[in-house]
Image (cartoon, rainbow, N blue to C red; front, side, top):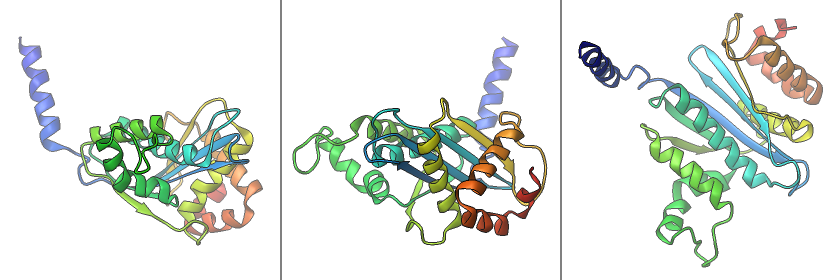
Length: 226
């Protein structure tokens, strides 16, 4: 009985303290297709506390769309941070008005009409919208969604865009997550080997040298990861 009581008390203490309630995370998401529709990729670049996190992956091998990859990036980001803590203060940035307007405005009408749009037609990408809506509803804190103009010099947005483009070209067999320091040099998170971070950096160097210069200007320690 005592073990049960201790467990209950520990759960109450966890819920009461909510250690991540004020933990702010800026999340930049993007999706891409080499040919629309075609093979696609998605990318997530997140900044919080003293570290950054990179997630990227591929879409359908044969036929997907930019919109599906944009939505997939949002879903992957939410799943990732929900698995860490449900109390992060998330701000999700996207250069897709389809995603931002959809999740902050259009979705309420879709749900009221039974996932039918204002023209009386089934909502496109309903499966992904329902999954994103489910994750948003389950998240404990309100999520701040912000639209950013693409290719306007926002380095974090450009990184997420390039990750998506790179993955649309290379199409990995599985999702990849990379955790690393921000502003200092140390080992990455146990769940992501340092070699993955080097791989991502090599891709950025080779595919987008101009972007890589901007990255080094903000995170110069990355130059030492060889």
